[in-house]
Amino acid sequence: MVYDWVVPGIAPLLLPWLVILVLLALKPNRNAAAWLIWLPLGCVYGFTLAPPVSLPAGTNFFLDAIAALAVGLAAVWLLAYSLRQKHRLVTFFIVLFALAGFSGLAAVARQGLSLSSLGIESMQTGILLGIAVLVSAVALSLSGWISRRRYRPLGLYLWLFLLLLAIWLMIALPFFLLALATNSVSLSWSELFFPVMAVAAGHFATLLPFLVLSSASPLFRERLKALLQVPPVPPPVMNSLPEAGLKI
Image (cartoon, rainbow, N blue to C red; front, top):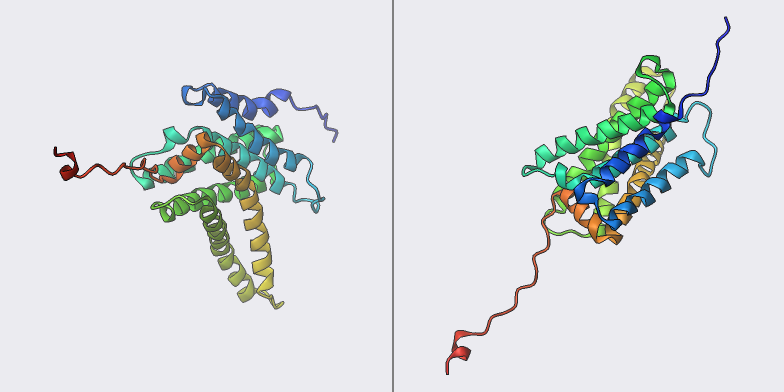
């Protein structure tokens, strides 16, 4: 059987970038500083196009998931004020759906495939991306709850990494225990911890450029606070003169 292979159209590949441009055209983003979102997005996306090390065969779906997640994070950062709601749980679900929608769109566009022709690698990308989106939303929500009294960037970074590590460990642990119970070959705990640490580190590295941008840019610092639902720092209050000092 002979198949005719054709180069996929360029329109699907450009779709995520057009979406980011549309978001930049929204009124809250009509600011030169908002265009800085291209820095972390380009950093992560460029890494997936030219990674410093070659990955084993059949693992390219990791890069597809990272690239798609980066697009979703950029969109969420640009829409932070619209996504924030009064209740933290409502904000969590809205961020989750927005991150899933934009990331899923980017994943399909990156592979240049229609939904009717998804292959095994696309399914692997979708599963990994779905888990990464959920883990990202949960970690951001929990780190915001921890930082609700005082926003400290370095403390936020540390908590976010620890939360990513803990959540990925909770996801992988049941599968590892099942493998221990059903596998005749003995498994060491290092076969659980090292891969989980690698995945958590890669996940954190995907978030890190956006966190650094939020630390460096006042505009995106307020966007991150909106996502985390961290209250703004009140302005300093000048001590008023005592009433006795006003008497003549």
